Length: 210
Picture 1 (tube, rainbow, N blue to C red):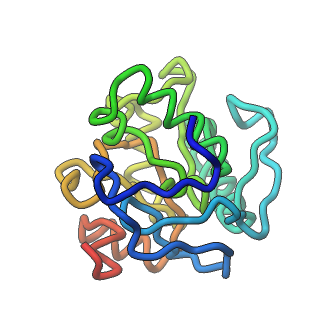
Picture 2: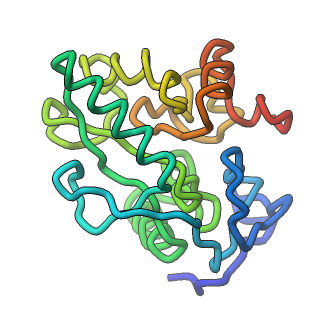
């Protein structure tokens, strides 16, 4: 495995040298973490709160307080409509992401790994604002056909009302650098989420860095 504080060289396939690397959280909802914009190995989000273990497939996970409150509102309103889903993943530390990424590389090779997993320091999950959502109907897994289930359709249709957007859109792979992920939500606040989702654009396009 790679050292905790390693940074890829510009020659590493699919992993460009970062435009900038943030080392601390200033609370910005629109913080960008992608293949070009990095977070340091010491970056830890502020205002993390523990996720109720009964609402997640994994125990001992944390979420930004504002995003978690918004998620709970979305979940409760969905349940009132007979729709239920649960959290699969939220905040991931640099080291956790490193382990996940290295496992994908070992199993699938570098090129494919870079389409489905973020290099450590480039994952949105490290910001604390991202959440992966699954459901019993999905056998608590993550798959693109989530969008064909009532849970996925409900989330995609309503998430902006609670401040979330679908982060990795279909047809935008050349901008986001990742495959379509209907299960991966990013909290950006209600006004921004509604604008982004209505326009069908990425966070990169909204921020003018696409």
